[in-house]
Length: 331
Ligand code: SF4
Image (cartoon, rainbow, N blue to C red; front, side, top):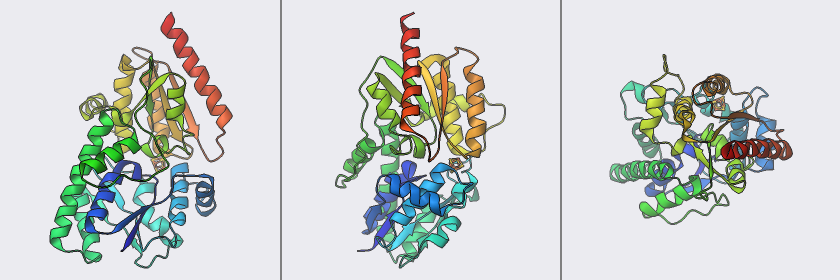
């Protein structure tokens, strides 16, 4: 059976249901790379240029971990997956950046997704991949409709408060696929007194190694973390409508829209996770910090992550922030 490798990094955390259901319905074997660990990150750091952001370095490590494990590597070139927003240039350039790292039997499958051209985006891109793999039209049609159903089911599961792994499993059950075996066991968090809005790119927040398990740590401190993916789309759009000029980046739009909702007083505090070396984060972070100083003055903290981030420093800052929120709540 043909093995298709999916690096567990970057847009994997957004589109895994779509990609995996599509390829599984085609009859191929989907092989995600392992959950990020020190070896994966370090091999990415050693093979990427120094100027890359942490998530792209991590992506390189995941690509290398799939070497000799799969026949095809799936690295889509996502330019625009939603009208009105573009992906970051580093995500656009991924297929070119990984070319030199990879020599699988059937090479890299890198469909371009750009809904601005009037095509159906993922549908057109994945059909091209299916054709190159010699799949019939009827099977491809079924794979496409299963994948679309899975992606919208997954989004609803996230908005219902599930965290990625649990949402994936619920999605697989809904499309009749067996449970996914995975060491990343993030599920629904226990409800707690305090609520903290956690903002950042999904590939940083939901990667337990890169984020040093920040969501689970907050929950263990008596906090319910709420991420931007858990905020309903209509509220995110309403938040973005306050901007005089729309933001370019689609991931940044979700973060800013959710930030506006959180800072209206819907949470007790807000934490923004940024990646060292990320251009979009520097602008988005500055805007959130300014908004936080106005209006309801919801406490705000920014945390920057890189390959040298230490656990002790993170835990100290989180504990201090949560203690401050608890004192504020009893006043
Ligand atoms: S948005 Fe930032 S973190 Fe994400 S790939 Fe681009 S530079 Fe890296």
